[in-house]
Structure formats: C-alpha cells, structure tokens
Length: 391
Image 1 (cartoon, one colour):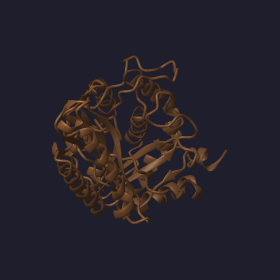
Image 2 (cartoon, one colour; image 1 turned 45 degrees about the vertical axis):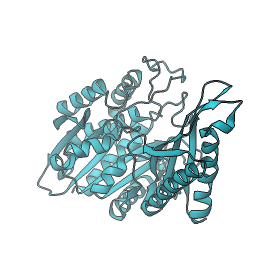
Image 3 (cartoon, one colour; image 1 turned 180 degrees about the vertical axis):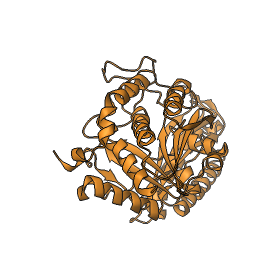
C-alpha cells in the first residue's frame, strides 16, 4: 500500500459507494450553467440532512452550506463547480448523459462528489473548530458563476479568511493524486472578443467598386500575430488566437461585413491590458488603411488572471505533503486555461489546486469521464485541510 492509499480518511471509504452513486446520477443528468436546478437540489438536500445551514439560489443556482463547530474564530471556504458542457457524450459509460448535447466533460460532477464526501465526514466527526463554508458554484464554464455569487453577497453571508478550489487534471505530466499547488499566477486571464469589420459589398467581378472586408480581416489577422511576438517578452507567455471568421455566403458576392472571434490569454494583468490596447490599435488602424471601419466588443464576461496567495498555497502544500508524501506536490507551469474562481481570489486570499486524474480522455472531450477514485483522494485532502486550518 502506497502513502496515497494509506492516508485515505477511513470514513470516506465507508461512504464511497454512496458518493460514487451521487456522482453517476449527476453525470446522467447534466445541466448547463444557471440551469443546475436538479444538481443544486441534490447538494442542498445532502447538506441539510447532515446538519449544515444551507443557502440556496446564490448567484442563480448556487448553494452554500455552512457548519460552525467549537469556538474557533477562523473561517474557510471550499468551492466545487456544478455545471456541464454543451457536448454530446461518447464515453459509452452505463451512466452516460441522458440529455442530448450536454455532458459532464470537465469533471464538475466529480468535484461536487468530492466536496460532498468531505462534507459528510466533517459533519459526522466535527473534528475542527471554526466555520466551514462549502461553496457549490453554478456556471463556471464561461458563465462567470463565481462573479454572480459574489454579486449576490457570497462573502457577506459566508465570510471566509481563505478560499480553496480543487480541479481534476487528466494529463501525462501528473501521476494520479499528484497535485500542483503554486503561488502567484496559476491560470490565465481569458478575454473573448469579437471584431466586426464593415466595408462595402458588391459583385465579385467588380472589386474596384467595393471596400472588401474580407481583405481587411486578413490584414487584421496577420497584424494580430505580431502582438505576442513583438510586444510580449520571450520569457513570458500569452496567446492571441483568431478562432473564427465569417463573412459572405456565396461565390460571386463580396460581403459588406465580416465578423471574427478572438481568444486572448495572459498570466499578468499589466500584460493583458497591453495586449488589449494593441488589439484595439491594430483593428482600428488596419481597417482605416483600407477605408473600412471596425469595432471591437466583448463576447462574454472576461476572466482575470487566477492568482494563488502565498499563505493559502503554502498551507495547502504542507497539508498535501504531510498526509500524502513529499512527491504528492510537483512543480508545474501555469496553465493557459482559465477558471472564474479567479474572481473569488480577487476578494479573498485563495488557492486553486490541480490534481492528477490518471490517464484518460482530456477535459472538454466527448470521451472524457471523471475518475471515481479521486473522490477518496480529493475528499481526504479537503478533510485534512479543514482539520489543519480550523483547530
């Protein structure tokens, strides 16, 4: 038996079948962001049954469970996400999604089960002193559910000295159960932008009478590629990707408008601001040079850089190493994906943890399925963290 197996909280083994069953049920009935009514009801029912004070409908469909034990004056928050993705499942599991075009392709069903497993054990044993806030968040996948919960008074109703989140990560670079717990920037900002180019359409046989927005768009795309290569240090990392372009509908007509989609990511807010400024300059100047016009607009709520505070990150590393061994925490570069937990991290000292899920399909893949064994490892980590910080 390795150190990982040896330090699983015994009580979590006792409830493993129950938590796995809850996870499979949620997986079978996935719900998109702000539609997680059924999932939220399951979570709230469990928490109420175990003795938590429950607040429903936070930020739309979020659930917050609070348990105060002893006379400790410290409080912490643990976050799990509830929503699924608009993907048709191809995993072939017996508990595959029953909703066409919707599946849990990022493991949020598993994150919910992990936190519920820890919640049940902590409520039964009450081996801590202080206030525990369990945050079950809607709409992480592009819906900024964390921001919605904050705007709905999350930390006013459930104040936290620090807040933590755990996300499964199926990748060859992390062994099962290994964690990345860095300080500073650990995930990128993400800006989803739309460029609308307006020219003058006309017959494809008479381009001289048009102002071709397709040509303008091509020039803008080429110029955008210079932002990272000529404005960002080679020692840093950022992304400006044109992920979609649409204009026209037939062969012999030059359209009057073209629309482009952009995904912009950075690890530093100052760098992010610079990139946004350069995009605006390029869009305007390139369009003007052709006699066209262009507009840049937000397509969705932008997520800030996710920054782990030194104190919570250090505490999480110490807990992981104490209970699961020195090799349980590994160095890992920041990830260019984003998570709206970044909004919570702007309000309260925070730590976001990635945990290796073993080999399997990647996140956001139709063949993906959460590794149920992570319920034991992740749940144990949450228990140890609470018992260490609230004592």
